[in-house]
Length: 113
Length: 116
View 1 (cartoon, chains in turn red, green):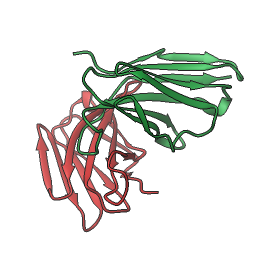
View 2 (cartoon, one colour; view 1 turned 180 degrees about the horizontal axis):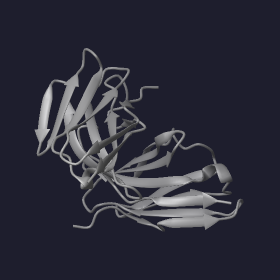
View 3 (tube, helix red, strand yellow; view 1 turned 180 degrees about the vertical axis):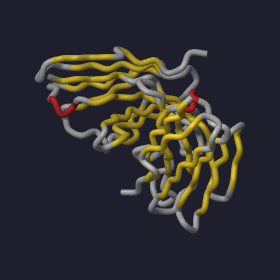
View 4 (cartoon, helix red, strand yellow; view 1 turned 120 degrees about the horizontal axis):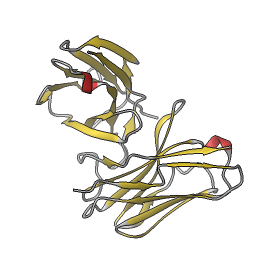
């Protein structure tokens, strides 16, 4: 079944640096979403990008989508200790049900103060 | 605004016991999802309701699992009898409208279930 795969599995950086996380998926999509999960908490929606969009910004977040390579990246600029969390991409399947999101296993980001 | 509320936050019980997890979605959201999260398998969709009706339960692992949504503000996920391999974090999420993938999902903080 289709699944987003995040890369790297873990990333450790210093406060102020940029963090880039990647997501690859297997089949055609309509939408791709990124979520954040703090330890012991639920997932929080960050940003949604549609298949006809190539780039989207929200505050310090920048998401790109390359449908030809079936990949997306999430860039967090000027990272803060509070950005420490796991980050997940979630994809739908344009050939399947229009409500089902498939989540990857996430990238664990640690921002050191 | 109140988010998705799940209870209990933690549950520890012995194998064979019945477990009931509860969820209150965000008011006005018509779609509700139950997920299970484990280290091995990540986040898996168990069941999806729209307007209180189960639309897709293909992710429910076995007949031991059942879910209900008696009204727009309450849903339960029941495991009977429970087994150690059911140990996981169970999340409830809600979203607007039909719950399509062009809408964000709003997650509760989950129930951490441990079956001894």
